[in-house]
Amino acid sequence: MDVVTDERYSRLAAEHLPGDLVERWTALLRPCARLRPAEAGEQIVAVLGGSPELPVTAPWPEWPGYGPLSFVASVRCAALPRYGLAQEFPQDGSLLFFYFDGQVDEDAFVSVDDPESWAGAQVVYVPENAPVLPTDTPPVLEAFPRVELTADTAQSAPDLWLPQARRALLGDARHWPHPRDTPAELKPFVRAFGRLRTRIDHQIGGHAVPVQGPVEYELANATLGGMQAWGDRPLDQEAERWVLLAQFGTDSDAKMTWGEEGALYWLIRSEDLAAHRFDEARLIVQV
Image 1 (cartoon, one colour):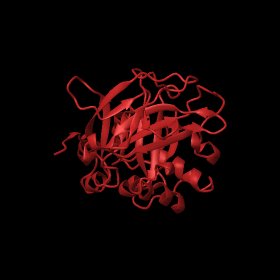
Image 2 (cartoon, rainbow, N blue to C red):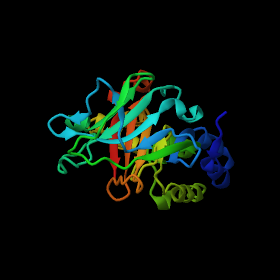
Image 3 (tube, rainbow, N blue to C red):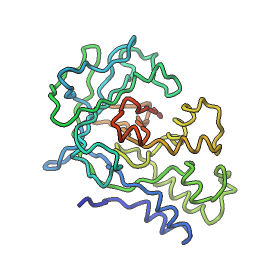
């Protein structure tokens, strides 16, 4: 049986929210698998950097016209704590994450607003028992150092600007008010929430922890062509369709630096996750 090792968000609600809002807020919390460096004897569930094991017939992922992608991480799906994952998440096999990080061409970058750049971030699903081989990094790239990770099951909470959080705490309001106009009963909670979300961990599933603004809105805005304002119903509906597949923060051990202290976020729609259509996953980079 999986054990939730971190219940910080439900404790936060109990300490800072009025009684009638506690249940509405905690209903939004999702378990996630939070990744951390594995200690001796702990199960390895994911690896940052190193050399990936690709299917024997699969080429190294590349962005056509630009070059090969850097290998970011591999995740063993069956080794993850199931309680921390959505029902649609694969129960076996491996997920490999690749990203065009500028080593080959520092002027080319992946943007969710530019469909022609989407090939610069790829997720490869390797089915269980598929023949694989360790694959050397292309010589034009420098591989990230290998870092082995284990996982703990923890709580995750939606960014307060997301529609479901806004509805739970503010009712029918279309957007959060200016800080000085925030209802007095919510101010202690909002301040405590901000202090709590200062570290961007490596994470599988759950709610994303953004560096700057909710990644779901950023993706929804791009999907809808940038024509909607925050709080507009179409934008809210689109934002709620996307779920976090994985996030990987800056990591000194793996020598992964996304901006100064940024992170990579792969999101996917629930129906694509269930169908293992990982080519439909989209990357948001926040720095």
